Length: 318
Image 1 (cartoon, rainbow, N blue to C red):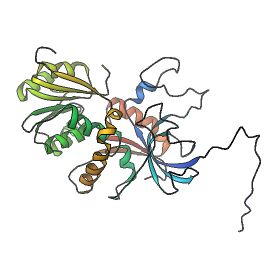
Image 2: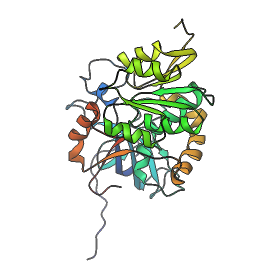
Image 3: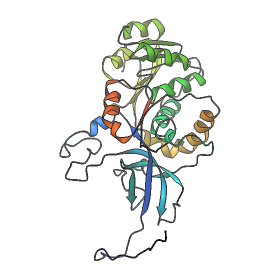
Image 4: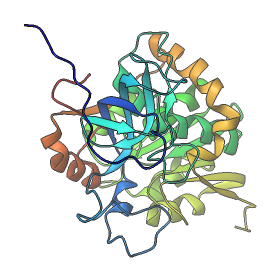
């Protein structure tokens, strides 16, 4: 059937038209920090709240998408991008930083998938989660072969990669997680000692297998206190997903992934996709197919029923 393209006058223009790009989303990231955005917009926080119903009630987060049409010279149709986007199947954006909340890191980045890996990996091991593990271990931890690292929530999106990167650097790895199934999974990743914190005493486990040179913290609370009590001299503690010692001269530093991109992003993209494609890294992900699964997926994430990285894939996504 023949088509009849038309040019329609819709409204009075305000100045010159702005170039826009049309995207189709392939996968959405689900992350613990989203809980902090689930609050009234008038309450201040360290990151913007999700928009209210009166302000375009579509949540935003890290996503991967393919370009359908572009009026921007730097982006071409068929390219894939990663960064902060609205969680909708189709989006039209006026700029690469349209949904970035004023931060440099979430700006859209054009992806170079030279190992032909699944595009949804870019919201997990090849995205914010993997970058958090890589930057935190490489720089803040400054690990040395033979040292002991302890990581909590070890079956989570960030920590299961920390386990593998630490072992590759010659560290002894102690890990904790919340079920016997997760204990088995983390053992299969190479951790030296793994325990279920719900059935074991964390402080006793760390006394028996420590002291700890590096603690990669994902949970805070009593686990963090137990780790501090069992640190070695000159230990380093990396705080991940929390915003928060003199006795053992411990270095504690908060980890926000976007702070390290200028220094390590190119290196990350050179090394991690290569090692994943070669089978040197294993990736744990919990994929929910269909956007109507978002409620179930977020609840699973917040109560610990997920394994690895939680990803929401639209009906015909990747």
